[in-house]
Image (cartoon, rainbow, N blue to C red):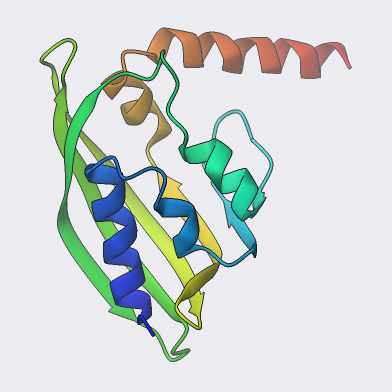
Length: 150
């Protein structure tokens, strides 16, 4: 059975290597994954099927060459929980632009599967790396305008 540290490393390396079809299997069938800093406030991912959809690239998904870097994993008094600081560093293969996206994940791993994750990452840097910053800001503005009319 994999430790929380091993599961985290499998996750970030799987993302970096584009092993999208393997990533949902790192999670329990019923899980709870949130992105608290998501400016669009997307709902939690609660099942492997949700994660399959989340990790499935589309034709519009930019090609990013990335690797996890500056990894620091903090053990906690709860053996199921780790706090992992890291960043994805890389290059947008379509534009040649370099990027770094900092993140902190708080993972609960039980029986070798992620049962809960709070993924704090810099959504603006991630959107910029993908060449989608203008689209994200427009979506945030539209969401804000809709809330103001309510």
